[in-house]
Image 1 (cartoon, rainbow, N blue to C red):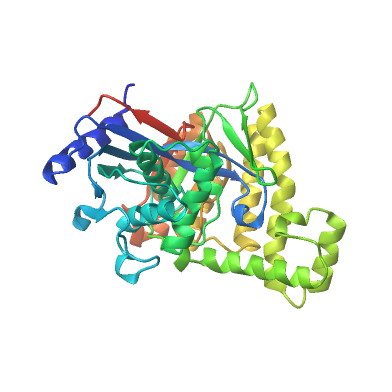
Image 2 (image 1 turned 30 degrees about the horizontal axis):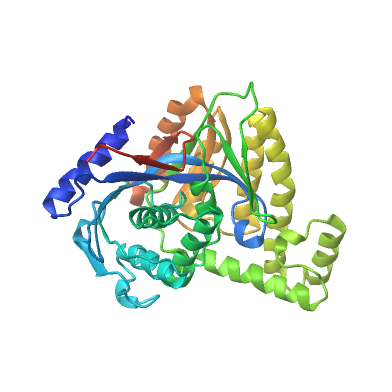
Length: 414
């Protein structure tokens, strides 16, 4: 299987890191896990909505080989100062330990901890080297890393999981229970199940996955990720955690008031929605703003999905933009740099829609752009963003992405 230019670059960094740090990966294999781009509903996963997105070509690569011991030895070419992360199976720091909060190795510890807790018998350690080019914030770097480590340890230990969706639960547990990040399942689902040239539709009611090709005759467009150059803290330290708690609080309030719901997504009937807004709009205005976004975004979701199926990418873009305004004004999860990026590209010809991505506060925004307008958008960002945000001049980036498989394994490269 041929590597792209980015893949060749990753392989070069991996091989050099393996030699420099005495990590034995010779004869092993490489697993590549993607990033993701959510088309709807952003922040809907922990609120119970249906989800739709694609895998995108920014990746985590892990080159690994079983080492015949009960020891895991991993090196990240992105975090060389952390050195080789080395530990015995069954002997990792306790969950949410402050002494590991700043090292990427907490994901490796967390994967081993969660797999052992859930009854998976790991008897074979690995040597491995990682490299990634997923921007920090908005494209699900942590989910990609967790999935890659889980799948690679399963492979090294000859463990097969019949129900693939269970791997999503494991990856979420690494972040929720070990690291302390309150993420939902959007990221893991969109990466694990992603297929090239396909949208992934997930229904949480029955945990089903459906692959949806874009309709014939669609405008030739590209997915563009607008990295603001900002450093986003983990979700546990961000507004994401606050918003999730607010939504859970509103659900609890409504349940006590006699509403038969398990999540905000259960409020689909407009009459019920208006009744709730009338009852609680004055006493809990912020919480009702969160519901306003989820209710409207969920209604738009079905229109977006139908537009995708028919190839009406213009409508997909319009809904993407409207969702962004809701995330900014009602959900209040965006950030100043994210909105600067949106403001810059919104008036550019050929930009079909734009909004913030991911957990919020910092990180990246995204846009759907006509293919022939990509360079004009890039020039507009490179000119205007450093003027508006001089403290991030030279740190920002424009990523033009393809829709790809979420997981691939390469043999014979090491």
